[in-house]
Amino acid sequence: MDVSLASWFVILLAVCAANLPFANERLFAAIALKRPAKPLWMRLLELIALYFTVGILARVLEARAGNAAPQNWEFYAVTACLFLVLAFPGFVYRYLGRHKP
Image (cartoon, helix red, strand yellow):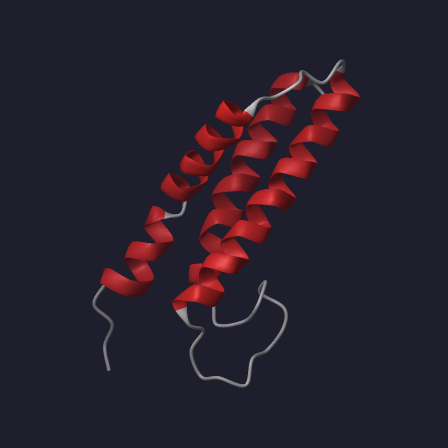
């Protein structure tokens, strides 16, 4: 896989993964819950788990493309904030959008 293609794949995957907790009422879009609506704390835990999943996949793709660069805490702080920004459309749709009763 080309490095540019892998980069775009990771970005697209991050956008989809960041909005996944807000797009449905299932846990990781697969496990049905007994509650009618997923609470916010569960959505945030799901968001954190998906952040680490996308990060691990990106690290694997980077290692396959060549030498994986060592990362410090600043890298993880910036990518976590970017992941939250990518989740904003899903959050707005779920909690700020007007839904018909």
